[in-house]
Image (cartoon, rainbow, N blue to C red; front, side, top):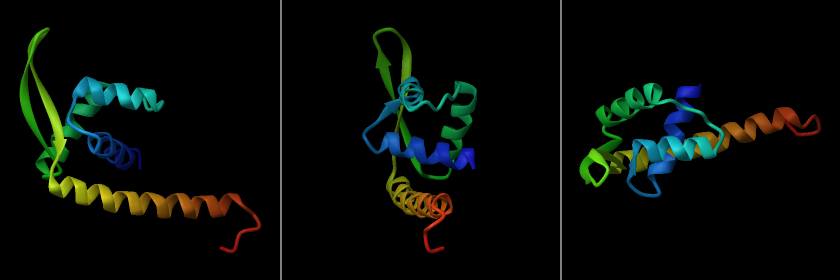
Length: 103
């Protein structure tokens, strides 16, 4: 389940624009989702190989070139589907928390 949530979070972050790996990690940390590079890199590669992400290299003033990731059209479609699934999941879980709801 965590992997699916991380995918959703990464796609959501990238829906706001291209991002470098450390930018993605920073956004996840801001959201209290602690992810190390050793977890993030394989996930980014898998998302890229699935056609959901693309990347470009950009020269850096402070070291080697940086790889910036962005959503592909398939990534945008997948994110929209994940948002629907997430909303359904949150709604279902919320109903279990409210003893007076109509299940």
